[in-house]
Length: 87
Image (tube, rainbow, N blue to C red; front, side, top):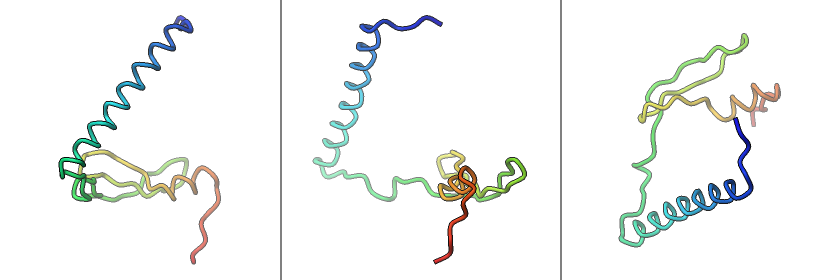
């Protein structure tokens, strides 16, 4: 794999920035047109279960979009080894 030249990296970054700003602008246009994104557009957990990793069980979910996710708190606990305290 070849290294990119400074000019190539710059061009890739410029294109990526244009695409990001285009996405942001289109979201602004949608909101201005009275079609603001609602909470109904957010995916919801349809199924839950346990994912076994290295002898530990981590809560995992399947979203309505079909994506599989690990709960943020559980992932943090697994990576740090620190369990959260009950309040």
